[in-house]
Length: 222
Ligand SMILES: N[C@@H](CCC(=O)N[C@@H](CS)C(=O)NCC(=O)O)C(=O)O
Image (cartoon, rainbow, N blue to C red; front, side):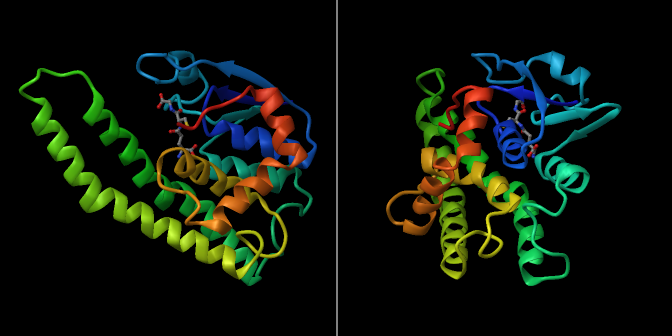
């Protein structure tokens, strides 16, 4: 039996969604973030040394890292579903998005989260203007231009095709969804990006997406 070690409000929602799209049986083991630090509980380190989510176990096999989990599930149980045929341009776009989502799209979103926190964290009054000034400078000179470049790029991808790896919905759409949901919550994805806004509406309407939310519990990207 596939077990998804599922942290609340996390990327593991994507794995539940993929399993629902594939119609595979699975169990969920729930883990709760520390409400103060937002970190995963130490029990998750017993499953994988980094203690991050998602991680799955499937009998004796343990797989961590969203992209690797998606590849494992598609190769082991996919029977050719949710992936473009090998050797095609769509397959190359698929592989690119699988890596790009965590390798390039997420870092500026994570940096924004960290520097937003720097701006609002309690600190001695004399340190506040300095911390705020540094945070605002890093955001305006580095983080926000990077976020914009990524959103512009992704909007352009959806001008080429209905989904991120061609005409058919694939697991690449699942993999990029977390970055887009996070960008809609706190990274500038708004009505200026009609294709990306429409993508979010289309994925939210998918029955498998809704089933995954019912099983994993509601989650918040902000
Ligand atoms: N690139 C990894 C990122 C894993 C990751 O950072 N997961 C976050 C949840 S979205 C986590 O476990 N955070 C809790 C912590 O760092 O303690 C993946 O895609 O699986």
